[in-house]
Image (cartoon, rainbow, N blue to C red; front, side, top):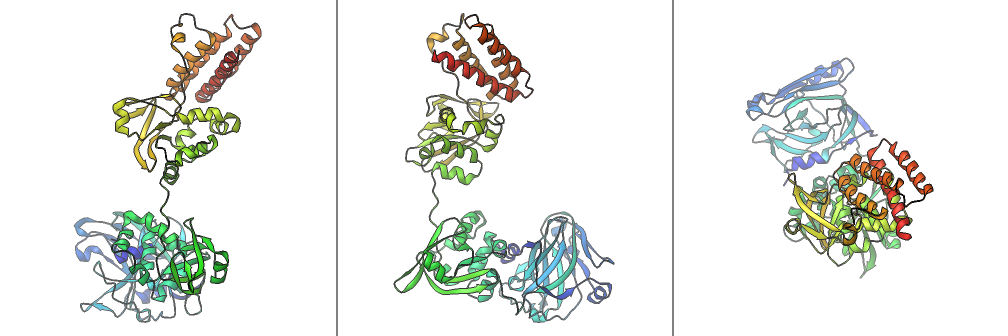
Length: 564
């Protein structure tokens, strides 16, 4: 589990512009800097080899720079003032205007608090954006006590008794660093209404919620302009969860699940209790709605009871609830798994256009050979758009049917079998080629992604149907008919195209077109038209586009022949 200092690091965000800075703390004028006596303290005091430097220019900019080293158990460089006496108790926190290098730094403040009779400090981290001036907020409510790397969460920070200011870099990353600081000022205070995050932190009932928001990385979102409506579970509400549930949610590997739970407590927009009851439900940031109703003399948010309503904040409103509301379990069918992956948008659009969506969400098991968005993008320009048109639905369905196998077929079973029959009847061949698992000529990038109604194998190219032949036609190769000639060319061309040799595929199709243009069974007008088409398409420089247009011409001729 993350330490409280690491969680605090997530709670502060760079803001391109923040209004409300008030009392100057450090403006880095020559006179002020002499008085504050900024000095470098590196890890050399602990045997480390890091080297930090500081410069304060005539432009009033502090430059904190140097090299961080991890040798000899080092790993930090700090900049701190001499003794000061500051009472900042009328402020909400510090605001800094900084230009950094993309690394995460910390503000460190010392008060009269001690640990084992020694001076301790209170720290809070802030990120920087490389070569960009930003303003960062460091709320006092998020400062965590520390002494020689050990968190002291029970130590309280008193902004009325600040005795030292400091900055430190301790991100455990070797190499050069540079931070420029224009000024340090206070912000907020009695005249400023806090945002939903600050209000929750100051309330005293929402320590667990604040910790969870930090672990989920959602503080930046809720510190934005909003407005937001937050259904805020109290600490007692979190304590009602089954034993171990909260600890599991706070683990880094469960961050996505924690985000889902917390987003289910937030509505975009400021929604008062009266409006919420009138609506009866509201969509959350998760995308799933919560039900809001009056039942048994109480207001209910799903099954949670409303304890307090309409706590107004600068960027929204808080409603206090007595239970954590858990979102419905996400669907885990093939379509939902593919959608959550985020790399199959084109495939899902094609499935919908073909009318196959029910196959991916139904009860019957399927094995899906899923081309990525990049695989569809590799098709010739305009191909996907053309396939998605209603008039080309049959062709699209034929292609997609080659990407599904009835039942759940693992990669191991497919490789052992060597082949499988696709949903549309086409043959799929599985083999190891060059150390890679292949299906036909596509490489399988990822295997055995499980769904409730099947399994997904990710592939790097779109599978294309091969031309159909029968035994009689295969035996008649010495004097093939025009239709047989086209079938043979397409069978060869598809294999060559799927190997990535688009120029070779185009050559096969072009040779076939030339043969058709010279076929005496065609009348002179047709032969002439075919010859002109060959000449026109042969001038196209793009191999992929030339191959597809030649294939389209062959398909048109073939369709005309089959229709006679």
